[in-house]
Image (tube, rainbow, N blue to C red; front, side, top):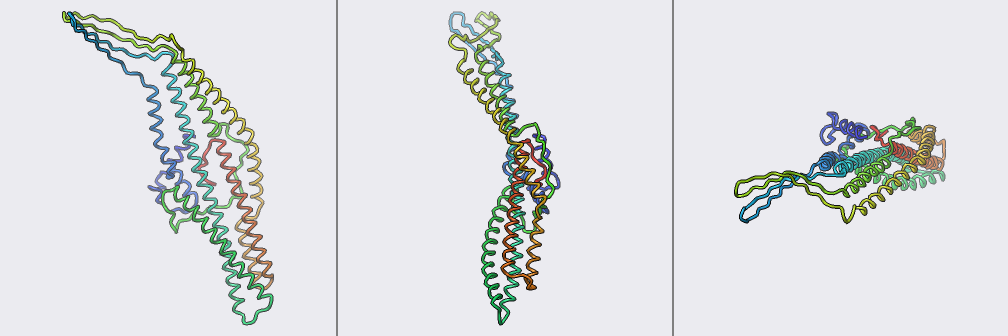
Length: 399
């Protein structure tokens, strides 16, 4: 996963994507790729690599030697100097390294999870952007047609009762359309603002965020056995706490320091020797620290097992839901065809082939159908990203 994240960051920072994503977006995937390198959450991840390197170096450090010097002002005026090197017994250093490696693995998993979160949020925003634009275009086309029909009816000096009724219906429907258009424009503005925050600049008016409605979805029958970000983090936490337990066990070993000593007197007589210092574990063997670490380890193992069981029991359900929804979307009418059906109905109305009430009902049914399909489409995307998260993966494209 870490390797995939590096590839994605390299792709998005290539010559194709200039500094600060200052390119013209021609389609939605251009912004998606840009966000994977420009989003503030992602840019901060690059700093965490130095943090991991520092943690590893700190854990592997050997303790510095200690120098002791003693002067005796007596008849002989002697001086004693000793250099003692602390020796870590009981596996203290190896335990620290084990803890640091586990913490670094947790850090990498968190980075991968953050990248996946950014990718998912941007992808969903781009899908919603397309959906809202589609509904907005439908409403604008409907409003334009109603305006044309209303103008034609008003131009008549004498109107039949049916035409008067039609005019009233069209005027009321215009108010409904204006309300819906206002709401969609506001929603589109919010989505656009969220996308702009991800790329660190405004989306220019001439840029396009086009994406295609999917009819053929990726098959997700088998999920990677690598594990989700959550389960991998739980396992890494178990390794970390195992290291903590080993460290607490090592603390029951005596502290040891050994090194040479030198004694010099006024008579210029110099003698050499060796000195050993160590603590005596008379009062405790750090049983409290070991007990606490053991309890934390057992709790972490239980949590990791629970997460694994939960995900394994849920993943099949999510796969079935994903397959059901995508099959529905495959068979349902396309969103573009729904727009065309409204235009066709309006042409019938203009030729007097259908009643005004019928065209309004056709519009309402079309809009409800479009919204229902788009709702299922969003569910399909959410399930897709959820299952990818269970696999511990970040798709290179947002679909």
